[in-house]
Image (cartoon, rainbow, N blue to C red; front, top):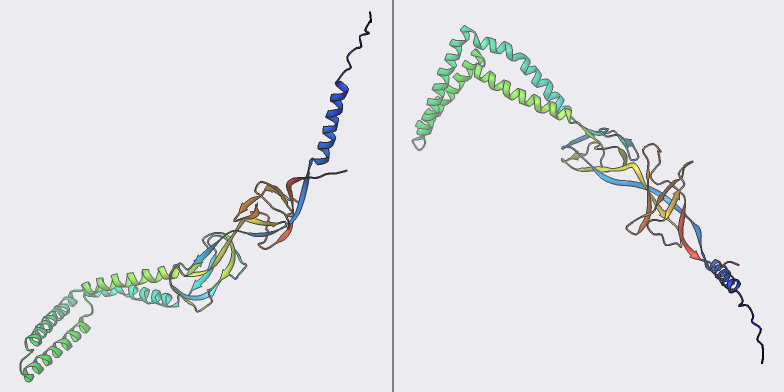
Length: 295
């Protein structure tokens, strides 16, 4: 009878550990490595808006040129308001004489003169009616009626010259002159076309002596409170969300890429930086890792 010697079962732990180690080594050979892509950026305005003429007029002078930085309310151009300024002077001179003329019109002596004017006006109206009735009658009758009307008109002019304007005429003159004055002052007050917001003038399409219509486009204004860093990395496919480090002086701006119309960009704050549209520089992008075999 044979006796079998029992052998202890060998441990599988070394084998498992070996397999794990092999997987780690092989995985390490094909592990995706982080990488930084080099690219360049160009600064562009956040937005561009047209500049419009606030009203019609002739350009007297330009207060800005292409590249000028302006604040909200800054003067862009000034219209020629010399005619309006003369109208103001003329209207003010007329209004200044009205108090004395009103006083004269209210004087007792003037009432008789105004009565003579009224009587002359009545005669003029009667003569005008006679001319109308004479139409179609013999020529001598028509001629006589017209002569009488001419005499009546001359009499009215003489009576008015002696009496001066009536109170009603002065009131009408005051109203029309005040309106002319207000209109002229409004024109002078709107002589300047101002910027609707802060920014940089990127285009001007007018010059002195140009006659403009209301709402005419006179140029363009760039909003540079924020700038778009337009990014290019040759040979790379950039996607939204990749981390970009834009070299802007001593403090690089780090932000995720956004894609606009298929182009990569990062928006940077320019409130205090003083960055210029068109400036360029380097950018580092943490791109999607690639699988690399390394030995």
